[in-house]
Image (tube, rainbow, N blue to C red; front, top):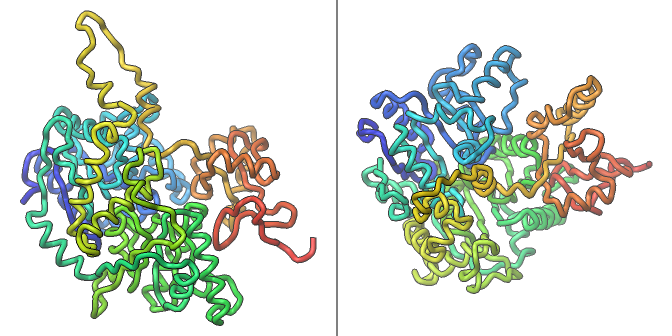
Length: 537
């Protein structure tokens, strides 16, 4: 059993729907016991599935409802400390500062950026990372432009700090030759290709080529249960509107709110709280056999447990396509394999030239072009067996410079400094360079729904009592939308966002000039798209 082996680097390659969440937890716990390790740190790339994973762990380990124990600690921006009693909330706030718990469920951002951070608040937990098992879920999401620096840090932890690292995913990157210090990870699953073949028989790809948006919208509107994933928020919004129009024209929407009749939009234009509500209702409808037509960005395709009979996926990197296939006949309940339709919009300008773009160019088209090349190479076929080939080609085209764009690794490992000169490391510069998420977006608090209005009232009272508004920033994150600065300037110019009253917190003025700038179906609207809130003003 692999868990009985000494500490080091491991890979766990399990197809979507194959139970990798519990399998990875089981390995980590047995491995920690065998090697006298202190804790398990489970890092996830998306905040949207951190809570889901922590819930699975609590149920599996039998700690549901044991409010007096901090066996499983969540550390991410969406965690609501006020949802538990005040004493437990106080203890959890203290515990997350240094990760003092047996099982930590956190995000890649919290884990990896802390390892390169220069701030005491982030570095306070680092001593408790030593002698731990780190599981990186959805390992393929490690950012390519920081890949060499990320692998070097993880490898250093295993060599000098008693850490074991497990790369866990259904689409394992072909990175064995990329580890800077020469370690080759051990594959926990002894026959990963056989396991993949067993589970991927649940769905099959069909390459559709180009489709007109209107044609696709009508086809989606005519299905009872279907998921369609597109690459951008703008495409998701436009296609969703077309689907709603088609449904109204054919009489399958009676005039009420689309989500009440089974037609949903999901994107990062919606707050995390809003998306969680919709995903919960989507799961219920799928379980009860009710109508469920979902238009989403890729936020739903990795780790979110939903099971559709049919999936449509816009062309993307092959890893994304395989992850999307994991939402199709996920539980294997259909008599026949589910179908994943891979398509391009007819007016998309993507071309082979994207294969030669730099990392700063449009990454979505870049990876999609590599996938198209592989499809052509294999005579129009597409399967999960091509994932390894996809990553080999991707890394080969990036080259060493593309995997260390900010020259973090090359600068930290520079051995050309004169031996007589003592040089200190510029920790602040390295911390600024190692950022997994683009910090170019500003969170805007959206007081949506009764819970959002309650938070707005709480913010007002909190500040009126003389407290700094920034002290509530973390609590407001579940009700916030990240907005690029250029777009935020438009909202400010139109008086749609208040940046003064609760500075530095930006607050969306939900009802301005008798309009709602945040829609119940689509989330944050563009400037000029505000919808009437009342008939008479």
